[in-house]
Image (cartoon, rainbow, N blue to C red):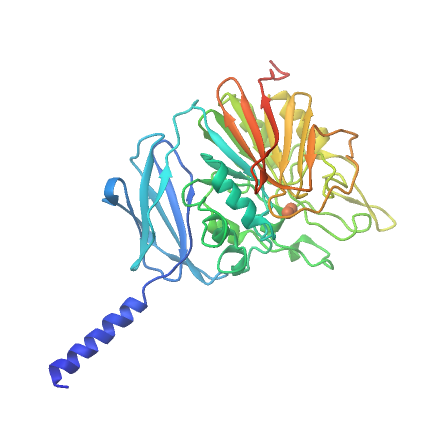
Length: 426
Ligand SMILES: [Fe+2]
Ligand SMILES: [Fe+2]
């Protein structure tokens, strides 16, 4: 080999090593914060190169974000690009790039103008459960929602990489179709509410909430309005409100408190005051509220009442007030909320109380059954814990239509319409 050949071989080796050092896309892309003229695209890679998106007809338009930022707890780089200057209610082809890694083409849709009919998916409690891939595959086959309302418990452990990607039934892998599931999150924006599992589990021996994991990973991965823990947004003719209502599960509610995680929702609390302010003007024809902890139901998570437990002299705790049923429900009735969605019990239940529909569509990956009596003596309109299912909601300005599908067959478990109820204060 002469010196030119040697130099050529060395150059080839450098080029090959550069090729093999190309970034690998580990998770995503996933969509956040659509508006009529913009949308944010996020993904996770193993490299901190510049975050770029090709989009539009023939993928000729370019948008660039900052370099991927290293997130220590997951040991990977988080990327974000916002595309601006788009047309309302329009689907755009796009693909993501970072340091040589190039995704397949996907498509994202901008939000329609205010007041337009829309459709959305209501699910929760994925947590890598065994039937999750089957249910997500059924979602991909049966419905095409404009957005996904996810009422908490995306994963089991927020700081464990495999819960998000690269493990068995990881959240992003199943919901982007990288593992058995469906390509949803790269095409449909996700709006999550906080569940107890986004905080992580405190040890059962824990004596205070300080031993509970933080929300650092959740807030690093998602880009959400307001303080990201509770927020609201409009989409078409619906005003969506996401509350932070979750508590730390403990082994024995009679002798150990079930602490309210994060933001209190008791009257007078900052979150409650924010909610009153957010509900006061009627922003769109429909108002939908999502949070994690059930207010009603026969699932095992509805008792004891959701409130700050009070320690008694014998060391046990009492739960003096049902904050969700006695306070929050009245607020929803006063302000004409139309649909409230929650999760946490891993069942399907539908209640209709004083004109408001309450829905839990959280049996997407498993169930724990319906072991308790409804604590308020209420009877559900419909319930099912035996089947895996999901709820699909379509709106026009006269009604919302809720259709709940069995997975995997797609037979309809329940379908009902929601019509306007005048708020009590009008
Ligand atoms: Fe859960
Ligand atoms: Fe939960």
